[in-house]
Amino acid sequence: MADIDTANLVLVNEGKTLQQALFEQIRERILCGSWLAGARLPSTRALALELNVSRNTVIHTYDQLLAEGYLVSKAKSGFFVAVTPPDKFLTTIGSKSPASQGTNNSPNNGLFAPGVADFSQFPTKQWNRYLQRHVGRSSLLGTQDLQGLIALREALAAYLTSSRSVECCADQVIVTSGAQQSIAIALLVTQSASTTRPFLVESPGYKQVVKVLDLFNINYDYVTVSSVSGLDVDAVLSSSASGVYLTPSNQYPMGCSLNTDQRLQLIEWAKRGKRWIIEDDYDSEFQFDSRPFRSMQGLAAHASSADQVIYIGSTSKVMFNALRLGYMVVPKHLVARCLEVKDALSGDTPSQTQAALADFISEGGLVRHIRKMRRIYEAKFQVIKTKIKQRFSGDWVVVSQGAGLHITVEWRSKVDEVLFANQAEQRGVVVRPMRFYRPEQDKDIPQCEGRNGAIVLGFGNAAIDDIAPSINQLSILYYQLLNDLE
Image (cartoon, rainbow, N blue to C red; front, side, top):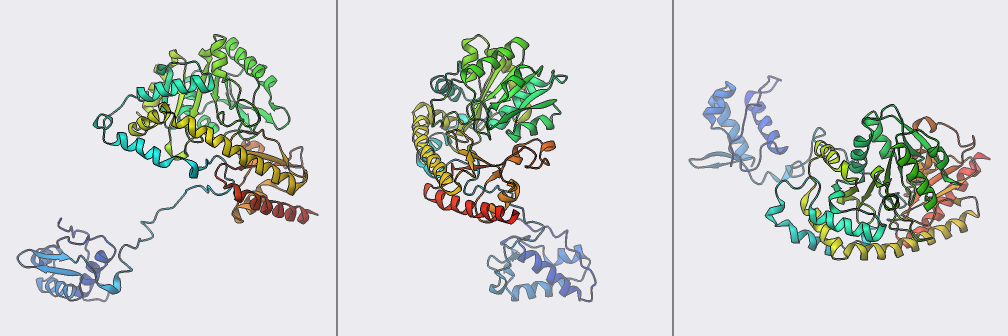
């Protein structure tokens, strides 16, 4: 056992004897865990010399600590911190001082929290078997391919080709630490030389994109997405912007999609002006009202225009958020530059989870899980939609399509959406106000000035039996707030 460093022992005359002061300092260090059980103390002679006190002071202090059970003495070896401290102080051992306590900043993933999948349905045992298959492989313990394991890139290329009509090869696939890193890489690569022309982002839209743009001081502007007409495609087509970020399969948070004609117009706009389309294929796997549209990347490739499209996807919704694995499909001429940026941001991606995911995809586990979850999420969507209609009788209108893991509702009353969301959370129901997704300069515009109240409810992690009671709670709260305004 290691020897104890006593350099931080300082005896100060505060109305106590030296022996009493030394006793209290040693006891305090043992009780708070600074001196570990079994650690050896200095000899009485060495500590006396270090503290410039008489040896008898140290001897009497050690004797008192021995008598009270804080130390043990071993013949010809010295004094050691007792493995088992005195019983009356057991509650003190291991307690954390205020300075050592951390803050838990985990988000509230409670009922109706947006963007959270149904983890109870994930095949955890099967996934753990895949992990165990690769955890002992010494070849995966060192630095790996920056672009991602070839087995995973090949599996992703095959999966995307069959499920989303993406046209790519494994050498165009880059494995990332989630969609957020993919977005950062895409923006840094495509926008670094285009500071004079703004880059377009959806409004309301995905806040994480704006965070990247702000962090790297990239010039940007907004394009409106409404509950009535969806993305303002004409505004994009008339813009001289350097590119646009889109969630065309299920726009987040408005829940609308771009049809094939709109997608082709935007692809032609990008091709004609050498602009970029960053396609975040968010929620494309979970479409309930209709079959999903072909990916913009696939359409662009068919029109020989894929050189202006970067395709982004992740495993957060189809598997689980904590996996932190995403991917991007980039034009061949951008691969090297994207890897330079990834290398600067993070280096390679954890290899064992990559290998497990490659097997999960190639052996059919991912497709089977998606098919099962599509049925489950559709059932939840129908329940929540029906209960909203029953409880609100038209006062709330569902404006989002049948897709994904969230539902968006609007109301025309003056009930404040932020106040409503805050009070709902106090009742154990997490909803997100639409103001959360709007540009900072628009957040102070009152709802009464041509803007409906709106919230987003995520039903992915909601047990189907909890949906109806929770909608009942929300209706009671809404009408209470409405009555308070009258």
